[in-house]
Length: 210
Image (cartoon, rainbow, N blue to C red; front, side, top):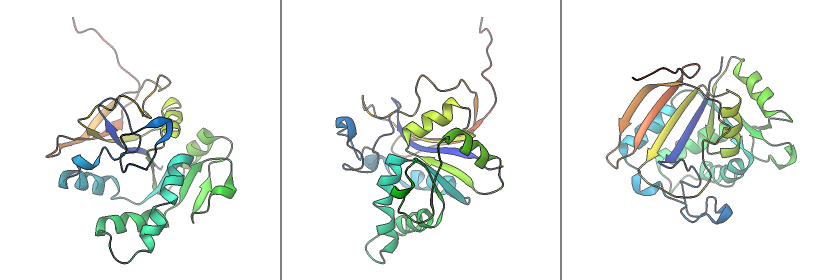
């Protein structure tokens, strides 16, 4: 079976909007785009290498897809002026299959892009049951909400920045299905980021601490 893995940069108040740059996503007046930049270090780079170290395809919401499609193909086409890391990600993103939460197939111009159709949850459940590459969810807050609400998340790779943003698109909402996860890997970066990998561990267990 394929695993659905959330790979998210996230603030300590649950915001995942526009970590990469000022113009990445300014919707709803968000003005803190690029908040991740001050925290990037070698440990964070190593955590990303682990998350993207196995063959993968992407599960993306339409907003995140549009952001990626407007950026990564251009990077993949460059031969100079980019880092080896950016070029590696660009080539991988360009080559992998992008499954997108949209009904409008005409808007999917990036190669190897496919619509998840009318029922996102049914299609993702079908993909999970197939043999193949893991399915990574990046950004895509609305899609993540849907997957968390329907018990379709197998792992979470959360890179937690020591920052409060106050507003912005959040990863977890009130519709998330109660689920237990167990810690599989943890590290702390030199900039104070918590780099956490969680594996799904069944239903929520309760008891008394008295």
